[in-house]
Image 1 (cartoon, rainbow, N blue to C red):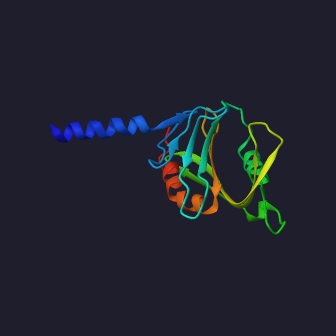
Image 2: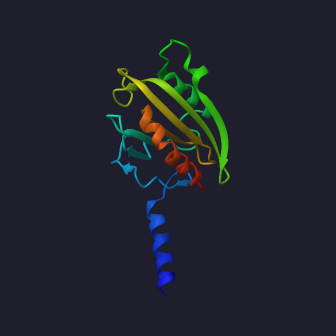
Image 3: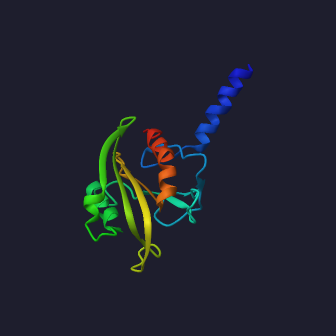
Length: 174
């Protein structure tokens, strides 16, 4: 009886920590702290700063609805355009792009380091340069529309969070 209750408790805990948008479910890493509601976001997580970094990272999850939010390649191009390279070369050449399915969900991923030209706020034309930042992005394709996962932060913090980000992607399901 104890074993059955333990299994039920574990399953209930997993269901409570899973999140969803656009018909796709995921489980956020336990060390990431869910933030309050924000415009245009399905979820936002604070990613703890790694030793040596002064700022936390952030993983923003966007879902705009069927046929909304632009195409996958357009969004990857836009994310890459938010970075500048210290040597002045094109960020596109520095970006690593890969496609991989996770539990039947097609995912396009991008990994890029450089100076992140962070927007001061939603739709703000003002940009704040953040040198030494890194992006791990993933776009999960769903019949109900794409779900966008965008992890940005100081390089060490994002590198430390990379295994957790991969686990989040491995938890994707329909």
